[in-house]
Image (cartoon, rainbow, N blue to C red; front, top):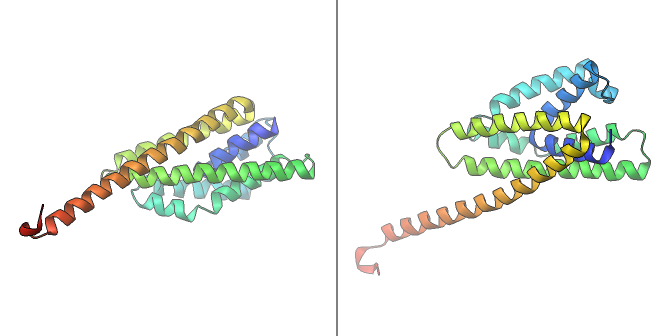
Length: 200
């Protein structure tokens, strides 16, 4: 497996759903000859990852609970991306390992920020359908990227890099739109609170 694309793509996926990444890599390591590090195939690791993925699967689809979960995961997801990078780069030199760990953790942090920002924007809508749709889409995309990362790492790199750049652009546009909407509501409240005689 090519290390740089593998680390980048699993880092991106870890920033979205770290527990699913660990679970999938562990299952692939046990059932195929994918060359996944033994530490990820241990039974205790798979049980914990499966339990936490089940918790995230539910929490990630409930408005505002998902944002709370994302806040809690701010340290967990980048750390998972870095640890996975360290494990898969076991035979690399010290310098290479340091670079790969930085790539894995940094990419996970970037995709986590994108996910958190997107969810904050989605939560401005009162209905829960958009949360469920977004969460299921993320889970499916993470699963696909992890499979590609193991068997076709350069394809996974291209897809995850595109998703990361697209997500950053979307978050910026959504945040600007939310700020404009809040500014308009604030101005409307101020206008309503003014006495009629002082209104322009």
